[in-house]
Length: 198
Image (cartoon, rainbow, N blue to C red; front, side, top):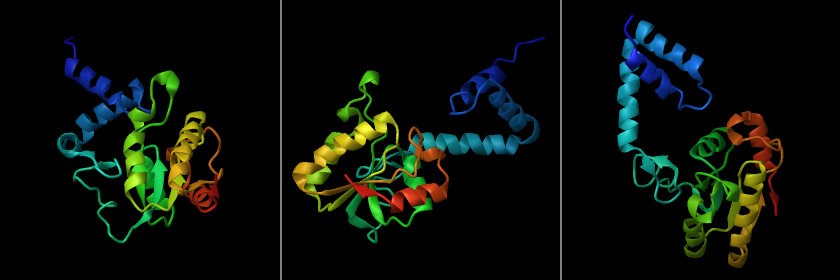
């Protein structure tokens, strides 16, 4: 029986997604090619377009196909209130679960010295420039409630001190050790409305 090298390559490639192991990847691959080839073609085209065109917003660093993302370009949002999050997924979740009308800054990570991730790797130099050159009056720290997330929040709070900016932290309705991506909307909304000064 001939080897199915391309199918094996596809299954291996699908395993790069979070939560997708070899068995799930095999089910996805077989479904696409046995039952939904049109879906496979659309997925391939859309994925290639995203790879070619998606980059990072120059202001908040979330994923965007434009120089400024939709949120940063929205003049209705309050540029005086800046919410710091770890990932673009967190921006989406907060927008869905809360009535937050400020702007965001996406770290695309969190401080983790053991993994070699320091302030430069998560854009804290760019954040500090924003604190110096803008009219920000409040920082909302919405990093995850992990050890690294708490460390990152504390570090950012210290950065804000010389600028006399109010700093608040989302409340601990989010469980310690949890990540925003996996929290239900009502818990996230409660945690966000109950944020406290630090």
